[in-house]
Image (tube, rainbow, N blue to C red; front, side):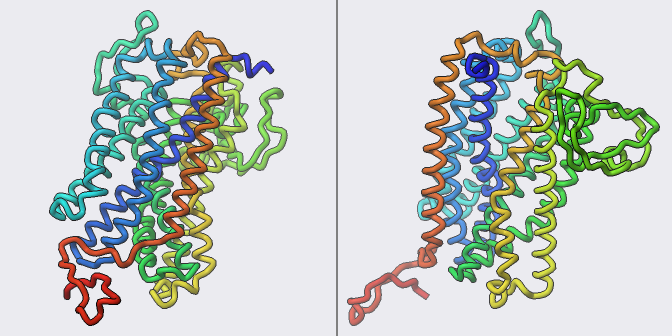
Length: 475
């Protein structure tokens, strides 16, 4: 097969595999870190032991995801030197420094305080432990900031010039705060937080539906729901702002996102494609459902466009995204999931206001709990779909408008890449299955509701009850 002898295609596939697999784990840790800050803060304020036990229970899932994230993230970055050496040589002075910040500043911050967060409960004062938890969450989200800065720069390079095929930095701050950076960081931050909230809510709903530790997990369910009230709709809005940036800076990607082949001139309405079957060979859609004037309202909130929306035919085939169908449907999957999660949140809020989520009534809300369980993996799918739109839609450029992907790949035999790709596939499959196994064990076991509270004196039962000498908490 031609694919198996194509170094560029194999290197792209390998990077896609490692990136998609790696993304599964920090998506949860970045958002769950914030949840751990919330529940530990509630424990310190209210002294309710359930919040302490929530912190201990969810921290197990956090560290499991953290470990797999580290194991899968390092090989992904090494590929810049092995598979993408010409690209790294051209942009390494800036791009490499950003990745260095992510490792030396953000990752080390998270890893440095993780041990205190996990094992310091009875070894350090509560305020010190809480500070460690905050630093873990801050470090996890700071990693996201640097990664999004690096990737946003690939989308909208700024702060310097390419001289002799090498990027020379003129304004480092401008390069960091490139046009895509801020809104991309916010979009990813709320995306990871939303994903984590619905995972936590979904797992809590599973316990409630199965009548296990209902009172305990009702608390985590309500915390996730209360936070989602703000996060879910805000994520939709920020996503819209990100799409406006694509309209402004990457018109070819927007054309692929909408499977739009013909240009809609300024001053005229533009239809929006709800569903379609794009055909790159005929440069048209074989089948399509359109919403009249819809694209104008989506992009500019008005019927007639102030600026033209360019169609794919405006670019030569080699200068535009080729996997139009993948970009088109990935965008719709991401958007559809976003609106579904908002709808589930609204349904849950209505039931909450009706008193249906009280400790005595919540277990009867079986369809609502099933909805949250169903929603638990959807955030992952939305985030992965968003990254597909972001990166596949950027093609054929590795640095948009400056360096083609084919020119950034290393000159190595395709057989070498195929070998490493095969090894990654096997190892990552084992890691994925192992993570699901250990994660399911943690969930099946449930929370330890007998876990002693730090700082509370433990005494033994009276001698006459020595046959049942389990520790009891001093009152």
